Image (cartoon, each protein chain N blue to C red):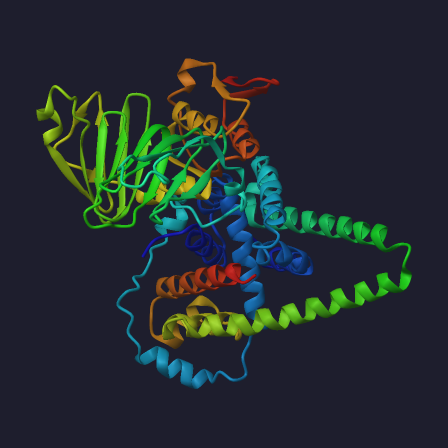
Amino acid sequence: MGETKKVLVERLFAQHGGALRAFFYRRVHHRPDAAELAQEVYLRMLRLSDTDAIRNPEAYLYTVASNLAKEHRVLERRHESTIDIEDVSGHEMLAELSGITEQIETEQRVKRLREVLRQLPPKCHAAVVLQYWHGMSYEEIAAQLGVSTNMVKKYLTQGLAHCRRRMARMA
Amino acid sequence: MRTTIADEAAEWFVANRHGLPDAGQRAAFAAWLKSSPLNVEEYLGVALVALDLRHAADPGVSLEELLAQARSADDTNVRAIGNARAGGESARSARPAVRWRFAAVAAAVVVLSVVAFAVLRLGVDHPAEVRYATRHGEQITQRLADDSLLHLDTDTAVTVRYSRAQRVVEVERGQVLFEVVHEAGRPFRVVAGAAQVVDVGTRFDVYLQQNSTLVTVLEGQVLVSLVAAPQDASTGARSVPVHAGQHIRVADGMLLAQSTPAETQRTTAWLRRQITFEQEPLATVAAEFNRYNTPPIEIETPSLRGLAISGTFSADDEESFVAFLRSLEGVKVEITPTRVRVSRR
């Protein structure tokens, strides 16, 4: 995957990250949403047979997921407005409130993520910090920690999986 | 350590960010994604965590301290992984992640008949008899008087007879996971087809199939024997101990001398309403789906019945499974109101 294309795709993914996050983190309360989105992405992934998509399955996955999350968000907004169309001030208040909720949620998520990180073994913790806060490559991290690149991959895998499991449990 | 879908997703995510993945790795990754909607969900989840991690930089954490700790720490429990895993072989899980799509299954309890007559008749040790059953596609969890739990899978029926001397559960059909509370002097006995299981306080699964009964022990130990015919007590005399992580099959009234290792994650996958299969014949997998769904999947071309497939699906997500079948080369799927017909294209 070309570097620029990868960056583009990740930016696209980040743009709709909010909606996706709602799907996946709040899976306990919004199970059907998350399951439905994953199923829809999956069904589209199955159609992935053209060479372009195979050349970059990850980009394809993100594009599909982002588009679906965006569509869902549009639908949600429309839904909200039909409910509150009679009461403009109520609607405004609701929009304001949801903004505040989102902000609180982000703060809580970051706080929780920092706690979860501290549960990791030292090398694993360090690898995650060097990769995600300092943007180091696997090779640079390997040199810093005095381990092989494969070990760095192992630490990052362990760290990500742990964070994912803990964050998914956060309702 | 147990590998979960989260581990696999994280491994792929990390591998995809190391240089340019070659064609083989990309194809293997695509195959992994295609083998389960759960894989797709988990990969997106991991990607979001990675995104959040970038924003979670903690000024309270000193990099110097962290590095000093990391360099002096030795973690012998972590071993390096080669590139082979993410590179060539198809990486998919036989072990499902925890997911509860249906929180309120228990609400759909169908107690077909309740015959309880011992409760009020003091002094008579007459067993209270209660029958529990699930419909097609339904699952229930039932707590018994002694706090033991019965998890009933789809199309399952049991009769529970509790007396002061013993506790007996008869499995008429289907699959049941038992979580038994031990009581000294009041054994817990399960009868399923030709098999009899005596429990010593534990968790085990009993699956009554067409011509056999499969007993899998998850925790503790049970004794498995044949249900003795009244006139021939000798056949019931022999019992085989089965320990945690082992299973034993009683088929055609025969009991093997020893239990064999079981994949317990797979045994209990149904509790999470998942169907997991690894290189299993299409006919077997379709039969599993048909336990939960209508219309039934029918394989019309005999040669397709043996086709080996791999994947993990929600038990009631027939749609995804059908889409998966359609993506297989040379396979045609037709959906009619009463049948899902699978044939050779």
